[in-house]
Length: 159
Length: 85
Image 1: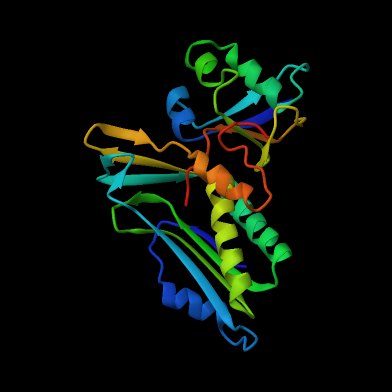
Image 2 (image 1 turned 180 degrees about the vertical axis):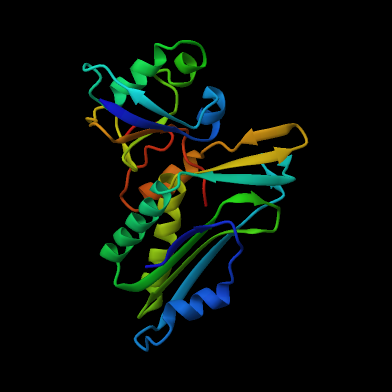
């Protein structure tokens, strides 16, 4: 279960190749990549800085992947999340999942992303023409997690 | 009891520090107690850690609620709602 937090960029092809290497039971690979937009909440974004909680971040991501594996018969998953300075067009996050059939690969991949958005300790700070600002958490991210039967307390601030 | 404190993102900036070792009196027993104890410092501490502010808490690298008991040598963290992905 490779979970990585890193400053460096990642290569989708290399990660997928490593994830399914030698496993002929794999019939489906679903992958999601999140990228940096040049616009957020109506303002141009020149660059951003991603902060995280070393130690807790890795633990949280591993627990999220473990929960996905408990819910769906997936073989393995790779989660890579970048930190540090990022520019528009840069890749931020990769989630890739292998399974026998597409349904569980799609579902587990989306579940991992939805869970990550509300439970993994990362924070984005954007540079805009008006100066630097911390990105606000979104109600829609809590709602996305609720579809999986999990209650997010990200915005409420308490468990 | 002695614990490690960690602060992140906007909370870290508002408090002007990312980490601190803290010696606690015996009546500080939960994560919520630590939050209240730090508020007594006033100023940015009182404001940033105020009740009703969207603040997340962790005990030993697990998201947690105010009622979670703490123990000597552990780590308490305060930070805003997460915004990764």
